[in-house]
Image (cartoon, rainbow, N blue to C red; front, side, top):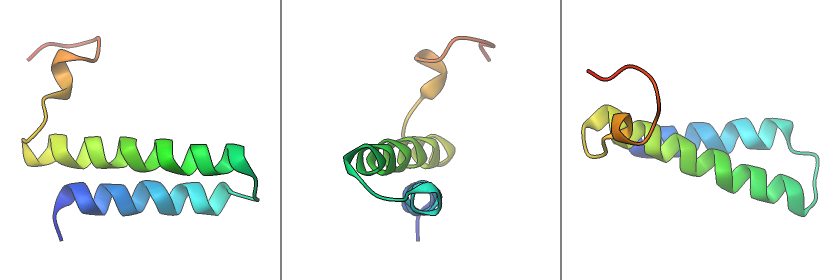
Length: 58
């Protein structure tokens, strides 16, 4: 399993832990899944998040 897929699953699981129900929690699960996927893809080197996030440039 790739890092981006693992990140996606981790984000979705974190959302499910906090989810009680409702549309707002569904949106939170989708948002956390997308963030997890982006972080995993960054760790694999397929996405450069440093260009979009403020902070240290390396």
